[in-house]
Length: 448
Image 1 (cartoon, one colour):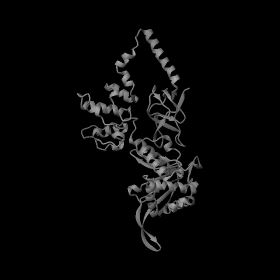
Image 2 (image 1 turned 30 degrees about the horizontal axis):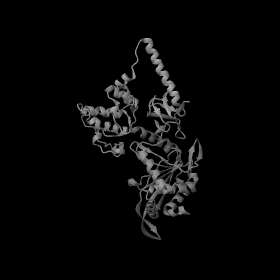
Image 3 (image 1 turned 120 degrees about the vertical axis):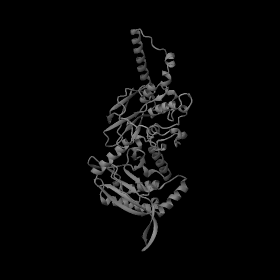
Image 4 (image 1 turned 180 degrees about the vertical axis):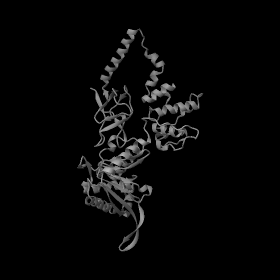
């Protein structure tokens, strides 16, 4: 029985989704759980996994199409169904050939023509089209991911131009790189062969590509209609923040806290667990505990009503090349510090590599935005809708404080709680921030 591939609802208020890129093409075999298509929501671009194993058929949504949530965009046929479909497709051309007197090409002849070689390679439709235009055998284009994209073919063509007389020259020595890295390199006029990659096996990632401009004599790059650009994610972020700022009545609560004992806790936690625990991990743990004490803060404003979140799921604002994303640490209150550190490191690294899954951005009930590493003392963050609040964290710095009526120097931290007044009032916000401040100044209170 065929399985429908539908446009998923990744967010509470989502009505449509945009098909950014099909990772498989019609006729390809797919395995359940295998990345199938990239979908763009109003938060981030994510990979959607195949809901079943079989053969991809009847792709009805093209790249760039905006599709309503719940609409079928393709089918996955079971192997038995796919076999029947292939048999029917084989019989029909054969019958047509018999009627016209044409002789079908034998499999051996087809292989000799190069079609079998190219057909066995995983490649996007656009990559195949460009390869056909330039006479490129896709089997010769090597990529780190194993799937050939448009940028890979263009890089191969450029390599052939650089060493036309060599069959195993620069084209065969193309540096392994992600498709986005190849696109950025082409746009910026950067030679990937000279870039040191930080990815698996030395593969060049997007963040490795320097912002070196093209030579003055080169013509400016022509924007590609429909192609993913840096502006896409930034535009989405701008739209969401504009909506939040213009519709949510914000108010702010500020608290400066002594972090002397928090610093000691960090050192002990690192020694006891052997994990690379950070201040962010400690804050996630403490925020989760404060939310458990004040569940009203763990809420959302939706359709004119307050919706209480049952789980404590904390989002972390992560800066990426394209803008800002907020991956979520689910059920943070149930995780130990070592587990929190591992989960945080995993989602942040995948966010920066553009490999977030749908579940990674779903279900967030509260967000932490930490700019302390950039030397920021304090700031007011914009609420991440539909959540009720977001915590802005500044840097840890030595400041003069009053201690027993005398000036003393202590390491302190400024916490700013931004609240949506529709879902949270000042008293409840202040009680939450007070509880959090007490936990930061005395972390051992968690053991009570």
